[in-house]
Image 1 (cartoon, rainbow, N blue to C red):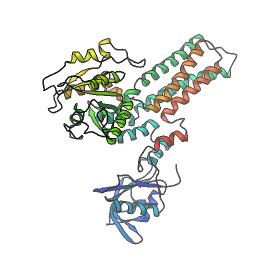
Image 2 (cartoon, rainbow, N blue to C red):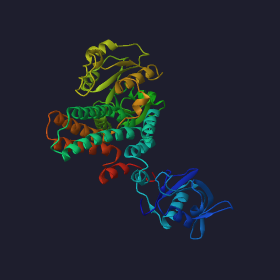
Image 3 (cartoon, helix red, strand yellow):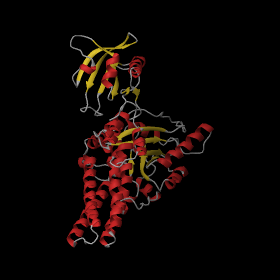
Image 4 (cartoon, rainbow, N blue to C red):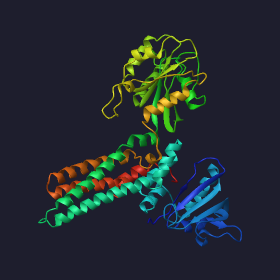
Length: 476
């Protein structure tokens, strides 16, 4: 438990119907008493109120009323932080809510750091570290699938499985250390076989979790898709169709898009960040040159490309150049303007476009799947857009999205810790099979146990906690 009491605005700064100022700590009730005056015979001071009740009154500062408020009182340990918590519901408005917060600070609280309420919930044992991270995922969710995955993690399902894994590794380590305490005794063959099986199961489970890392990162941060093509091919019109509203200016004049435009869309439950790039061509002025430079930067960061081609005109030298230039990226060909007479076919495109080489860390595919798919669309009518969304989902997410998968999708921090744990576990298993000194086996198992513990925060360092919680907004 902490000695000081923190306070912060828990709602976004700005004008609105309500604003909430949150207090947490051993003196939360006392601080609230100093600035809250109950109104009515049934209203009480926070220190006199029962837990989980709401009191009506007003906030006073230097003898003057600041605002008419409702004051929610929640006593430890049945609170978000497991400390005494008071939430003051005042009228929304920048000046009004700031004055209430200033009054609370003047009466003994200090301004909370980013994520400090959730950090206290973690340090006081209410949440493990995976659940604390899930709070941030919940706030930043951009699709229903991302929201479902965050809720599964917040419910503790990932943390429970990680804790079970750590307990199994700890039990194996305890067996080994027991034999280290009695060096004259050999491990019976049956016991050795049982220890090896436990390690094998632990490594297999870590492999299962590591396979969810890519999908987990897609749900959390989205996947970036650059829309590329020569000027006037229909890139901005395609962006507007995918978003479902007019975001980019559409004009028949080539070079209308001078800068990159980024917007996130929900594509079959997946957050996809679409980047409308300036047409890649020889620039005619400094503004267009800068737009093309930014387009190149966006292309380098994009995970895949939507390459837009005008099917109503013959393929140009620029089209041929881009077909070759983006051959190394995941991509989908978008044949636009199919409502007009066609100048070339999708089959001709397949002959001209080189297949993308499959990298070593990608799942093996049949030869027919290596080449980029081609989707016919008309960006003025919306024809083919639903088929394009299906193709995007198939490109970035293999197989069906099942509810049980959402329970254990790890993030990049979990991935790093589990990779280290797996590496140490494999070394320990090989040493045990080779009948090497047990102290070597135990040393590697210690590394594995500590790395797994990092995931749920049982072996977290102060620097690690700071790096996680500083990502939160103040008030959460």
